[in-house]
Image 1 (cartoon, rainbow, N blue to C red):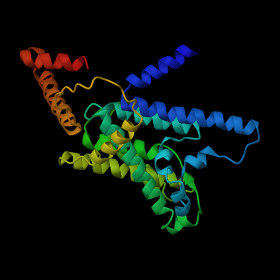
Image 2: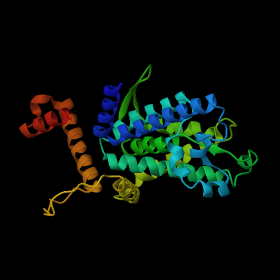
Image 3: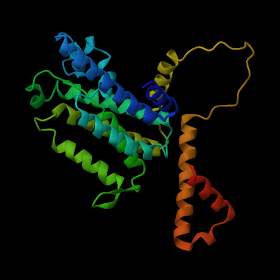
Image 4: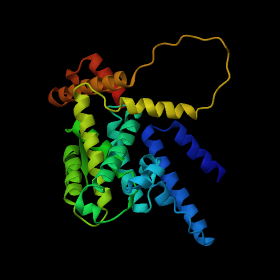
Length: 295
């Protein structure tokens, strides 16, 4: 058991931001289930972690539980809910990280979750159909994941994935189909808050992609906040008082731009390979193609 836990710790520490997000969601799910079993066995009914961590639609309660716009996006009650959200994050997260850094993925995840929370609270306090449903609360990573899905699809709409029975399908069609399903379900009594939040997350992902193509990264400020928060929990190392000036660190924007340029070069080489064959490639192009195949 100890070896298994050590392996999980190692995979978390060495994994990408996407991997860490999946780990956190699964861990929160397991911990909540353990507490639920313990509370049930000992007849403890005064504490409900789901509603304590979920975001309430009632604004006065939301002001008292100010942490819930963040915590709700890591909480799942049902296994299938968790499974499908993590699968979507895994599939589209892998594509997203081909063009952006993990820092950008994490920032967009949180930004999409906040956008979903904002739209959920606004809708359930203004729209008559939702007002008639009374007070409620919402959990789940769906809005945050939808931001990743839409951001990926609208930034690289020509990327294709192979679907069972359908074959190659462009990811833009998958993203739009998911959005349309949520939109036509806004009037459904089943999971109304979730569908509203999905729309908020999807819109944030769409805006991210469109603005990024214009040279603007709307997640930059969120990344800075996350960095500050993470630095609070980093252990302070005692070292020599001698300071060595290090080389300038590549910024998130520079990293993303470099990845985008590299991908465009590889796409051009692949097009040339498809049209004229491997022998038509120059030595430099063959080297770039070989290096890309090892990544």
